Image (tube, rainbow, N blue to C red; front, top):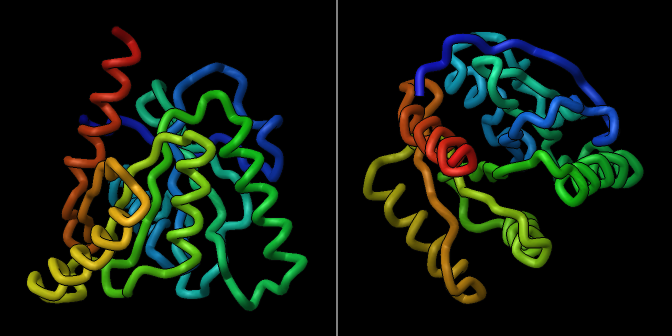
Length: 200
């Protein structure tokens, strides 16, 4: 897929106020500081489209970006940011949960995981919830340039072992580096293949 245009459309805390034109939506989510904004900017080839920050917990809204005037890339708030406080975390959780559960246009959710870390309880529980809710999702391992190939292989194997304890079938898995544009074509081609199959 070639990205010809990517433009910010709207930010919301309420899924009911999201665009009503019926276009397909591909949402990106992950724990705070997983590299979501950098990945979105890399995928769209648009530096500064999503606001990247060294401070975790920056995204607190549902952000819609219109891609090629055909589909939406949706930037969801990061979850599990401890310094947000219990009330703040609960508010963010409600924004995320209601969008994922009730947004009919949500076509696929991309869950971002930092490849440098061991499986986190919060991520595994989130995936379990997605499975129970029947939400189609794919996993994106981010920051693959930050560790050696052998360490990456080792870390991913641990994740897969953990997932296979509860999942009969694993979701699609992608490997990315925003800095080196690794995985860009694979993720965009996957989105394009879903778009085409729905059109058919």
